[in-house]
Figure (cartoon, rainbow, N blue to C red):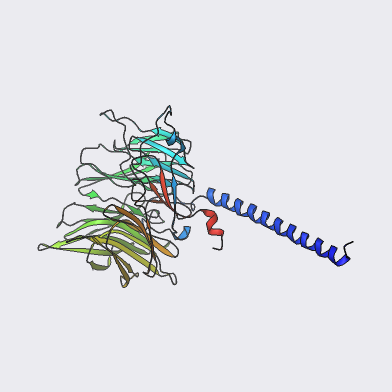
Length: 454
């Protein structure tokens, strides 16, 4: 017969084990529910534009930091050889990551589509051109907080689709030509800014509401550059270019009703990258631009900062490379602004990329060099900075700390051909669209991994 202490020890050990098992089950349920909640989490309550919102500042600090897991998302239908309806082609522009799972894509054969969890949820065709081919997206698209998708196509029309694939509107805006240049869409709280140049010299700027109705239209003798930015009051900042070195380009700011707030002409300066904003709710802040100044046959790459309220020149920096992208976030210590500029120079041999960190006054904080070519703007997270670089056929995501210390590179060289400008989802995963087939490559981490202590 067992003694009383032995019986009590047996009961206690089994009780402890039962409690441990219950705690494990509870933790797993909690973890799973948090993962599901994280997966379905939407972006902060603002519309989605490329390069970090309406300010085009490539700032993703609200969503956390960047990390290094690679996830491949290829449709299951691709494995079916006897599928009755072919899948759309690969993407022609970067994806928009609506949630951790759901993404909008625009294919090279003229479809807008929604894609999630290895599955094509729907595809909706754009209209047919006189050539018989369907129109395709001609610039970076946008999406609003209601999951409506907006894109500007090479037929000169703006299209919008809801999250079920139903077309909301098509609004003809421009008469395209062989030399047409389209600016990326800028989606404000309740309106859309589009821009276009038919010949690379004259330009048109159009503001429409989110139902496609045109509110105003402006014509210019210069061409809008690729990106347009706006502040929290929906004042618009546009760079207009001659697209010719040695000429004098202009920067202007418009009020929401289209009236001119200020205009600045930059003597003998061609604007090549524009604009990124660091603007407070009060309206104070700066407009950051990059360009090439040519005087007496000598060309200089420059970085310019203008006052966002008045257009007054705050400072300029001479650079030793052609900037490919500019970002504005906060420094690692404190809330002081951090300006990150990346670009590369090509001479004899391999390209050399330089990444600079500046403070708000233009003072250099740090610099790093890489023997590669940087693609697009650096993306700023809470603790680190990520950018895409290429060297020959090699492609990688480079991650560095905000104090200028290199951390790691994630190779994408074994991936299919990609659109090398990524979307960024709510978990700060970088989402690349495949260009020769339907599918995505994500660089980041699963939501659950951020909850684990290792």
